[in-house]
Figure 1 (tube, rainbow, N blue to C red):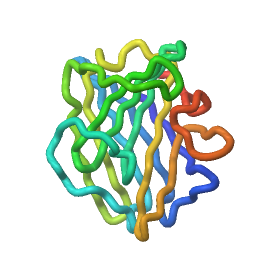
Figure 2 (figure 1 turned 135 degrees about the horizontal axis):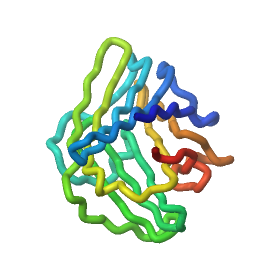
Figure 3 (figure 1 turned 90 degrees about the vertical axis):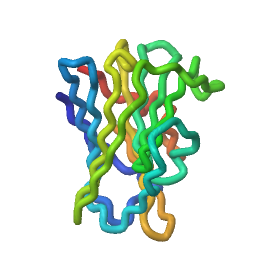
Length: 173
């Protein structure tokens, strides 16, 4: 089990969100559970449930992301939305034309909201993410008034860019 704490981009601070983290758990049955936790969700805006399935442009509102690399210029990106929609992309190099890789199991996503805590849980086939030596964890958080904050393990200088190598700041267990 791993827990990763994200930091907000300094040029895009949150309104009320106090923290975002990810807990990663590999299960014995061949699945990996990713649980994103957002503290301070009083002004959080989330998209409505729209059924599970693949969708693009999830990052335009609250969305949780995972980036995986094997150390080469190639990497994979996963997006998980509170709407239960998801996306996966493969890149040969930094921001190259993406492909949509086939997954052995469609990600299962559910979210829960309390007075102060929002949880998004994504379940993936462990085989679909095996082989990574570096990972990036990130989130786009929309709050009231359309305010967006950008959260990652680390940020490069300049504008938020989760694809930047500086964001691949952790190693999987």
